[in-house]
Structure formats: structure tokens, C-alpha cells
Image (cartoon, rainbow, N blue to C red; front, side, top):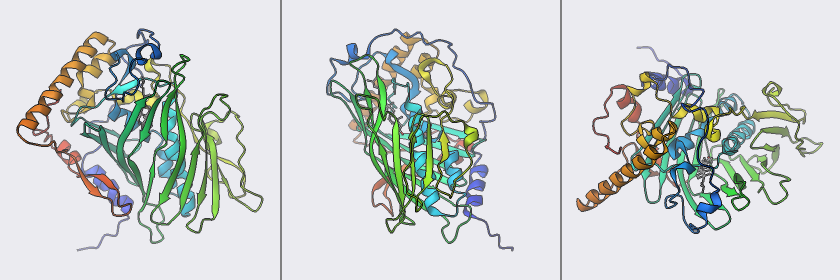
Length: 433
Ligand code: CLR
């Protein structure tokens, strides 16, 4: 027999294709919602929130009109909207440049939070969501693995990278702001194009805080703030990112800055920009490493790859926002679509099959509210029955393990979802709707 030498990228690509990951995603993606206009009753957030001081996301009893027709599982999948930056990161031979692009990717996820102050549906225990794109060659999967505290385990794979972690947030309304703190650690693996001995490298970081501000003033918005350290566990490179809090004056609103260091603490690159618009990079040279942030309008065509002479270059630019109800992004719009080809392949636990969310998307808020109540009661009964049998809920697609590099506890994908999906083998899934 012949020995076939294949790169890790090719191996991953074949795995994704052989497991039929893209089957069902042949139809063009959706570009609008069934409803044309957001006709939700206009009620100030403060008037309903004022009695809920101290409550977290799972306990807030807001009318369903404060929701958007997405599940938190789908909301978390929006992190990968700009994952082409990871494909780009993999093309660089220099690990500090890969770190620069990985860092910008981690900041790009906040673009989706602009003008999105609605509550996603709380996932039911055992709810899942899958998403694949033939154009992007990636597959995303997530499962709600715990209800108290709510934890969504996620796993995305693509030929050049993997992206995984748990969405595990602590949230609370303190009377003025609604604060979301991320407890989970997030991971990225890059399989570089030219691997000088490094066939795969692992990065990890903790996400910055999200805060709903302006609730009292009647102009609520999501702010993202705090310091983040991203570590490349394979090379020792690291990045310090600083998300500036919005503050009273709005100067510095949406601002993010960062520095890339190698393992000897030498600063090699700086980055900066606005997470609602665009982010630039700059090489640190003998002339210095300051990056000025002006608000000039940039376009995607200004993207030309890294410049080595110390001048600043555009790394990421946010997509245009369509004018659709709930201010969904063009990416978010596609998540709850239910094309017939796909329906035949979905697990019965998929968020797209949630009846309350479907009703909400169709503008039927009364039905959304009654269905939401029904599935939540069903979930409570299932929990009681489990307790009576002396059983504990066991996630179907993830296993909790210690991560070999960070020593942190993480959720490892058991790898079974896509093959079972290919064979329409979902008979032993929970009946949660
Ligand atoms: C931000 C991007 C992260 C993943 C993530 C997790 C939790 C999300 C957050 C994102 C955006 C803001 C969010 C939050 C959960 C609740 C909060 C949707 C997507 C909303 C705005 C809270 C609204 C509550 C009011 C209606 C009271 O990578």
C-alpha cells in the first residue's frame, strides 16, 4: 500500500466532507424575515425592569415582546460571523501575526451587539443548534448542557481552525445596568498553512463583560468592556486587549486596543479600532508603536494584508447592517431559516424547531408566549421525573474533561453528532418541545 502524507488541514477537510456536514445547506441563505416590520409594542425597558433588581437572565420574567426570535444558542453561533479572519491567520508563517489576526477575530464578535438590546430565548436543557456554510467550509454545533447554571457548550470546526468553549454567563440587573459576566474559557486551534514543526496551536481567553447601559435614560445599548489576555499555549505569544467602557461622554465608545507580545515579552504589533466598525493593526518599529484612531470611513477594499513598514493596515471591517426587524445582522437572519432540504437532517432538539421562537418570528406574540410557557412547564416536569428516578441529566454530545494545556474544565465534543445526522439516526434524542 502507498503511504499518503496529508496535512492536518486536508485531514480535517476530508472529515467534514465525509461526514456530510454540508448536506442540507445547499439552498441560498435567507436575506429577510417573514415579517417586514417590527410591530412590537414600544414599552420602555426601565418600566418593566424596575421591579426586577437582583435578577439574572433565567429569572427575568419579561413579556415575550422583549425577546428577539433567536435562541441564546443561535446568538452564540454569531461569534463566527467573521471567521474568515481565522482562515487568514492560518496563512501567516509568523506566529505573532497569527496572534494579531486571532485577537481581531475575538473582538469582531461584538459588532453583532450594536442595536441589539433584546433577550434571546433561554435554551431548554438538551436543546441543540447546528449551522454549516458551504462557502465558509465550517460546521458549528452547540448543546445546552446545563440548565442551572445555564451553560451552552459549543464546537466549530473548519479545515484551518477549530473554535470551542462554553457560554456560561453570570448576569444580574443592579437597578441601573444589566451586567453579563463570562465565566467560561474559550479556545481556538489554528492549523497553519506552512507548519514549521507546528501542525496545530492552541489559544485561550476569557471574553470581556457585556453591559446593557442607558436603561434609565430610555436609550439602552450593549457595551463591552474590560481587559482580556489571549494566550498562545503552543508558542508562548500573548495578546493584551483593552475594551474601553462607554462612559458618560461617549468619547472612546466602542474602542478596543491591544498589544501582541512574544514569549520574551517583546511587543511586536499593536491593534486598535472600534468593535462596532473596524480594527487596524500596526507593526512596532524603531519609530514607535502608537496607533492613532480616527473615525475615517473605511471600506473592505482597503484591506490589503499586513504592512511591515510600521504603517497601519485594516484587518477587519464590519458588514453592512440590513434594515430588518429586531436589528438582526445579515448573518443572524440566516440562523432560524428552515429550508426543506435542511429540515430532513435536523435533530429534533434543534432551535429552529422551537415552537415559541417560530411563532415570534412570524409575529404571533400571543402564541409565542403560550408556547414558551408550555415548553418550560414540559421541561420542569421532565426534571421532576428525572429526580424521582434518581437520575441526573447527561449531555448527549459533549463530555466534561480537563483541558491538557490550560488544566481548566471544558466541554469536549464527542464527535457523534454529524455522523448520526448523516444517517438520520436521532431516535434516542430527548423530546423537549
Ligand atoms: C455577546 C458576544 C459573545 C456571546 C454573548 C453572550 C451573551 C449575550 C451577549 C453575546 C450579547 C448581549 C446579550 C448576552 C445575553 C443577554 C444580553 C444578548 C452575544 C442581552 C442584551 C440582555 C438583554 C436583557 C434586557 C432585555 C433586560 O461572544
